[in-house]
Amino acid sequence: GQMIVKDLQPLSIVEDQGFQAFGELSLIKQTVDALRPFEEVTREVSADKYVSVSKVIPLVSLIHRAVAACECQGSSLAAQLAQQCQRRFRGIESIYCLAASTFLDVRFKHLGFRDKDNVEVMKKRLLSEMQEVYQTRQAAPTLAPSSTATVSSSPYTSTSGPSTSEPNQSPAPSGSAVSKGGIWTDFDMQVLSGQHHRSAASDVLIEIRRYSEEKVIPRDSDALVWWKEHEPTFPALSKLAVRYMGITATSVPAERVFSKAGEVLSKKRNRLKGKTVNMILFLNKNLLLPQYTLFKINK
Image (cartoon, rainbow, N blue to C red):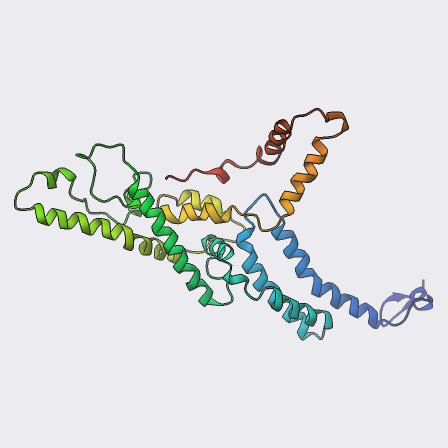
C-alpha cells in the first residue's frame, strides 16, 4: 500500500478523521518510556517467591534516576512523576525495617542508599539489636557441666562453623582453673570479667565490620542461601536477617492468598471447615518452596 516515506506510516492513518499530527506518536513514546520503570518496579516488589522488601530502597533510587533521565528529554509527564516521587519517597530510607533489610541483603548492603547518613543511623540501631541477641545467648543456660565449660560465652565459640571463621582463637581458661584458688585467683577473675565485657560490647562491632567487608554477591543470587552458609560466621546478623528479610514488600501476596481462598471454597466445596481451608492454602503456597528458605537460626 501507499506509505509516507518520512515516517514510514500507512497513508490511511493520515486520511483517518481522528488523525491530528505525527507529534502525538512522539508524545506516546515519551509516555511509555516514563512509565516503563514503574511497571518493572511493580513486578519486582509484588513477588512472593523470593525476598522483595530489601529491593524497595534500591528500586526507589533507580526510579529517581530513570525519571530524571526522561525529564531531561523534555517529557512533561516525567517531570510530574519526578515531583511526586520526591514527595512520596522523601523519607523512605529512614524507615528502619526497609533500611535494615536492604543492608542485611548481601546483594545491596549500603549501595542501594542515596544518603549514606541514613546508613549510619540504621547501623546504630542495628548494633543495639545485635547486643540484645548476644545478651540473650549469653544468658541462656548451657547443658554442659560448669567444670568443662569455657569462660567465653560469645556466639563465636559455637562449634557449628569452621574454625577459620572464629575470631576468638586462643583458648580461654576453664572454670575449674578459677575454682582451684591460689595466687592466680584474682587474675583469673579479671580474665573472666574481661571476656564477658568483650562479648557484650566488642563482638557486635567485630561482626558488623566483618560483614561490611564481605563482597557483594551478584544480584540474581539468593541472599537466603548466603545467610544459611554464613550463619556460623555471623550469628547475630543472621538472626536479624531472617527477622527483616522475611517481610513482604507489598500486600499483593496476601491478596493472592485471598483469591486462592475463593477458588478453594467454592459452591461444590462449601462444607470445608475453616481449619481445613487454612491448611490447604498453607500447603498450596509453601509446599514447593525450597528448603533453604526455612533454615533454622540457633538460639
